[in-house]
Amino acid sequence: MAKKFLLNNDVSIPAIGLGTYKIGLTDNDTYRAVRTGLDNGYRHIDTATLYENEKPVGKAIRESGIPREEIFVTTKLWGTDILNDRITKAFEGSLKNLGLDYLDLYLVHWPVKGKVSSTWKEMEDIYINGKTRAIGVSNHLIHHLEEVLKDAAVIPAVNQMELHPYLVQQEVVDFCKDKGILPEAWSPLGSRKIPLLQDETLIWIAGKYGKSPAQVVLRWNIQKGVVAIPKSSGHERQAENIHIFDFELTDDEIKQIDMLDKDKRTGVHPDFIEF
Image (cartoon, rainbow, N blue to C red; front, top):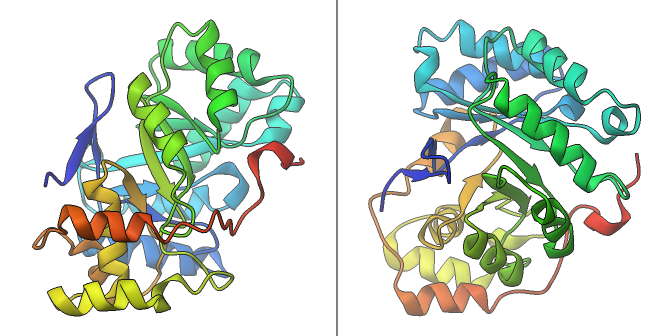
């Protein structure tokens, strides 16, 4: 199984990324966590305007000693910037905060009711201007994607969504793949709200391979053609999460994990997001 996927514009994206939402209490915590992640081999870093950590994330990337072209950097457009007609300014602000010359992926963080299509048009302009290698969306359901695609000149490269064995979202995943949109999973390992990693099925499969339940879940994502963005600040957990390319789940095991679906979200439903 490849460690990278290919976006619909032929840009390569690492299959495992490091999420940075609430990754540290301070900027120094965030900086250290990202530097540790890069030392552990992560080459895909995911942040957002909402996270208020673009500056330490960017500093960690710049000071890592790793060539910029080897690190895939994602950030996201927040809804208030859409409502205040600040989409392009928000993009430029994120670039400035990160201290980078370009992004690899810029996402609409959540759909804003009544502005889905117009937001995408301005995202297309940002892409055409060449300071991001790809654009996409996050937390968009099928009806949001249909609105984006209706008049789109550029097909979204990615749809990042909450996705884990208790929220499989297979219909959205299938729709994305049919349209050439790569699915990405945030919160792939659940959260304190969802004790996913204590699930008996995952523990049993993990024991078979001498792996952790977290590694099984991340492997499940990758084999289903989904980018996974786990969040961890510690060296050992980061290393565990990225070392999932030395085993392979069977088709039956993937189906067993699919069947764990409870339609259980840890975050807000995309139709009810407020800014």
